Length: 315
Ligand SMILES: C[S@@+](CC[C@H](N)C(=O)[O-])C[C@H]1O[C@@H](n2cnc3c(N)ncnc32)[C@H](O)[C@@H]1O
Image 1 (cartoon, protein in one colour):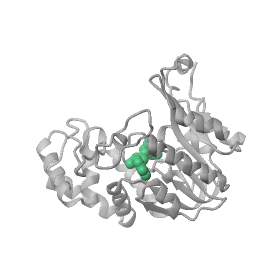
Image 2 (cartoon, protein in one colour; image 1 turned 180 degrees about the vertical axis):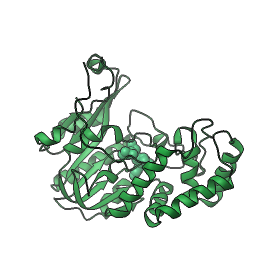
Image 3 (cartoon, rainbow, N blue to C red; image 1 turned 60 degrees about the horizontal axis):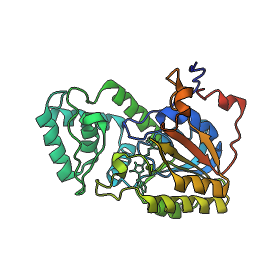
Image 4 (cartoon, rainbow, N blue to C red; image 1 turned 180 degrees about the horizontal axis):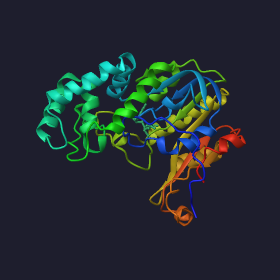
């Protein structure tokens, strides 16, 4: 029978409901990371669920944290949130909600806000749009226009989002976090990494689809070429004695990621299986079923897990 044995550490949760966000598996992946780092790179930071949980009050320490994502509008939003006081930000949110008369039913108000954002591209308009959008998703079209529809009767700037936002502000304003909006390869080239640095890579998955890898946002979609470039870049880090961890899925709905599998075997990297079905009492049977998703963390080092660390795991 599956049960939650221990959940000692509480983690910060991104205010953005990011597709592919790693909040739910932080208790499994963080204990596998090196504890002391000079630079920690969250190479595909998305909702920042990983980067914001590094440093102060975390089991993973770093003197410098780089959070990178090639979605420029997202990084502009993070920079704005990092540079402005919580009161100012909450006031801005309140004013935008009042100005566009946003509530759970007002589709026209939401559409007016979306039009305004697509003209002005102001970070706080984006934040409020995400709060009221369907499933709180960030989706752009080829012309870089936000095109996610209204989350009628479901999405709003609710108290959970407000609480997560306040914790997020506290983290990004008080930790040594630098936001970068570069392609992953440029981000790696621009960071002066040493043997004490650590790179966490959570790219779009080649064999699953999120709005950030469908190639329909005016940003290049994820494809085999990018996957191979990333794997080469990680191999290069390995050759420099720099540790990395890569999140990915090896199998999904009967499709196997052969490129990744071959690369892991050829280089002797270590595969840690992530348990994602722990709420289902029949998860072991499900897990053996090859049609299910096999989520993994691949490392180029053997993690030093102490007894204390394992207390953070779900079994
Ligand atoms: C799986 S999501 C990351 C989720 C994140 N770890 C979290 O917990 O919220 C992958 C991210 O990679 C970004 N991305 C896609 N292609 C990229 C590229 N070439 N360079 C940098 N970032 C990229 C996407 O915008 C997306 O935010």
